Each structure stands twice: as structure tokens, then as C-alpha cells.
Figure 1 (spheres, helix red, strand yellow):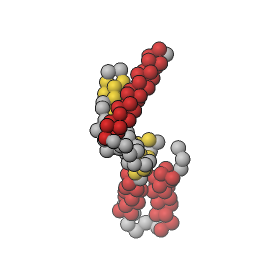
Figure 2 (figure 1 turned 90 degrees about the horizontal axis):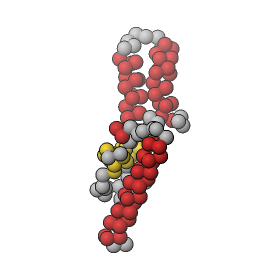
Figure 3 (figure 1 turned 90 degrees about the vertical axis):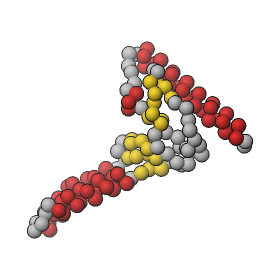
Figure 4 (figure 1 turned 60 degrees about the horizontal axis):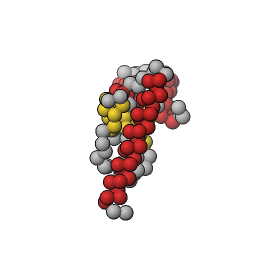
Length: 131
């Protein structure tokens, strides 16, 4: 594969994506619905994930290209393959644990365990359960 082949693949893929966005906008406009462009994002997953890609437009408004997208509480990261970034969830879990420990000096161990189960475990389970 030559450099100009890569350019053609990227160009045709971007044109195809823009065409799909245009068609989606037409259909939604026809049925009196609209996109919230501020909540729309594009992300590349695959060999070309570091490539500079043309701006996508939805009803003349730019759709942001992102390195990470939060979807159903889990972050998807752009890379050569699908990657999930669970660090924000882990930070939330540790923050919940530390908050309980810092405010529970002299608290009964069973009460402390119950608090951890109620607050910290729920944060961790949100990460593991399918959405």
C-alpha cells in the first residue's frame, strides 16, 4: 500500500461518513426531530487513529473529533483496536473509599463495612455490569 492509497481510503471513508450524517439529518428533519450537535462526537479506531481527519458537519455545525468518548459510563479510547479507559471509574471508587475512611474514625467495623458496601461497591459494580 502506498501513501496515496492511504489518502484515498481516508478520503473515501470521511466522505462516506459525511454522507451518512447528511442522510441522518435529512431523515430526522423530515420527521421533525433534530440532533444536539454538542452531544455528537466522532472518533477513529483502527490503523489510522492518529491521522488528521477533515471536519464533519451536521446541519452546518462541526462535530467534534475526540480521543475519548464516554458511553454508558465507560470511556472508549481511540487506538489501533477498541480500548476501554476505566481509570475514571477506578478514581471514583478510590475516592468513595477514602471519603468513608476519612470520616469514620472510631466507627464500628461492621458499620464501616456496610458503608463501603453501599457506596464504594456500587461505584465498582457500575463499571462491571453491562449497560
